[in-house]
Length: 129
Image (cartoon, rainbow, N blue to C red; front, side, top):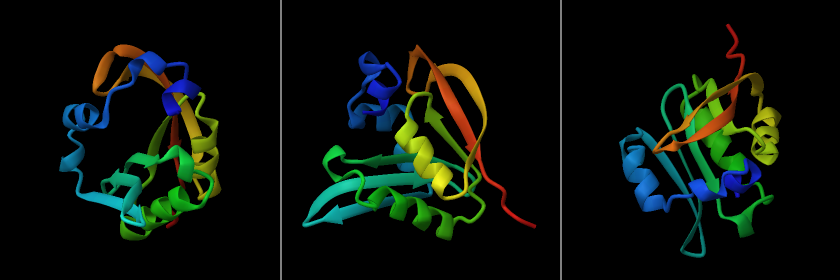
């Protein structure tokens, strides 16, 4: 869905391949949301970056993504960076609703699938003094 919103459908990689290429299982924090024994969402983050947040399309708009973001911020209050593909307005609005703002847009290549150029929103938040 995110790739479609960014007009990058052809860049899709199955999770097992994207996870391997981007060292998903090396993240110090991986949270998984499970409902009725089914994984419906997950996130991965470090002490300063929320790097992954995915919610099953049929479970979107139910507060699951927001709960995962808030959990990440509770566990690692120093998280101050998120990148969102340009065009993924639902994700950008979610992050803005919990205190992030678009600092700038950047261009580069897609991590794990470097043959695709991307444009991203680089979001950050004020951490207070």
